[in-house]
Image (cartoon, rainbow, N blue to C red; front, top):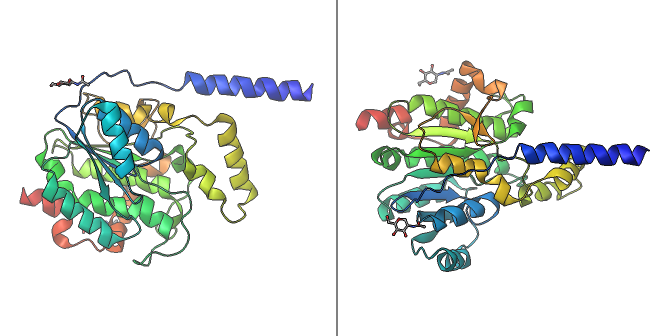
Length: 309
Ligand SMILES: *[C@@H]1O[C@H](CO)[C@@H](O)[C@H](O)[C@H]1NC(C)=O
Ligand SMILES: *[C@@H]1O[C@H](CO)[C@@H](O)[C@H](O)[C@H]1NC(C)=O
């Protein structure tokens, strides 16, 4: 009897999850567009790269692990020769700066910036003295987005997409524990940036991809994870979806003709923002703190860049 209840509950939840997994129906041809995908050499990033490459998009995979083999494979599969790999190490602001510089020398436009690279639990401090997970997921993307702002502004109808998570709903982020709550921080960065860029033609949105089985989740287990983490991993194992399903909302944001901005997407449509994201004062404080943490120069701040063009 007990087993039967558990089993039917499992099936019902699985079925509901299946129902809520919207698919992006766009068949848009992306020839002539340029997309940059951080963490594009694995997981969701790679799935997105495959898809947009097959639509003719100039696809740039920025990753720490060598993407030469991925590029060869994608060029063959997609018949699109405009697929490139660029090295970047998100544990280092120096590397992010070098990458941004090289990017702007090589590519003259940027239609879509996908801030997707992320890790579950990188250990220890980086060379910049920050907690590694936070720097990889959050601070390096904060910096990269600033450094690429001029090229985004020069490209008509460009867009910035942040991979966040509904995990942002349960965080109690504040300026003291900024480092612990990445998903909320990403969603907050997305909203603040969207407000700052209103009227410029650049749209900014965050999204929750769903419970996707990528190595972010399995890597949370390195040295004796807590029961809570084990439980989360069990849920992912039970109900997690593959990267093809997980990439749909991101694909929707890339291909959509709407100029929606400052939203938090789930299932290919705007969803409620995590409550914390609506705290304007906190968002502002965290933004200002982030500028300090990444050593942003005055001339690199959004307001200065906007004044210069
Ligand atoms: C996209 O359009 C271009 C011409 O604009 C065409 O050459 C190409 O075959 C199309 N690609 C796909 C995947 O439909
Ligand atoms: C953040 O910085 C801006 C510009 O320097 C300033 O106007 C604003 O008051 C600051 N906000 C907070 C909450 O510190």
